[in-house]
Length: 100
Image (cartoon, one colour):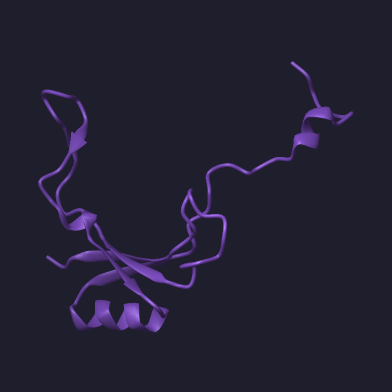
């Protein structure tokens, strides 16, 4: 079975306001075994530790070369975007805002 990896352009962390480390590419391994709920706590867990490994590369081509050299199937993902769109404080006082 061929190991699958995702190549992701890293975004800034939640604790970062600057632009540092945004030019790096991450190679992240996909899980080979499904997650299952833990009987005691109820959290989902897996016996596969490969998804915990994240390799950083300075260029996309280096990440691609690594995946091809090791025989991994790869998927290239765009930059991770936040799940919400930040709004300004003035949005609360717009005249066309629907109040409910």
